[in-house]
Image (cartoon, rainbow, N blue to C red; front, side):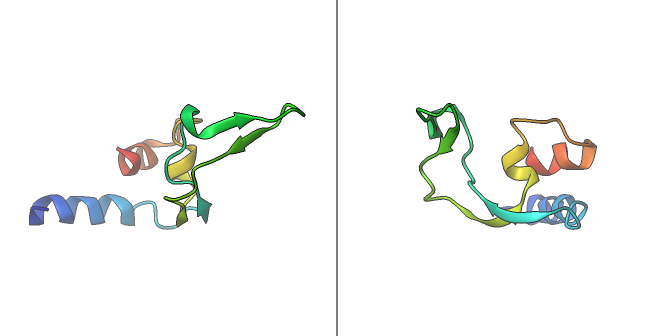
Length: 73
């Protein structure tokens, strides 16, 4: 990765480093969900899971503020 791009990534992620962390799926999309018989949704395909900022999984579900949008971009 070019140095200027790496620096931009680090700067962007540092701006949201105070946001909540948890175990995130890492590849949340409709292909990784199953509807259970009780109507609940289950996530499958956890091979990319990790501890990281919750905003990376919630991106498809909510807009977030400008800093979060940039960090997910």
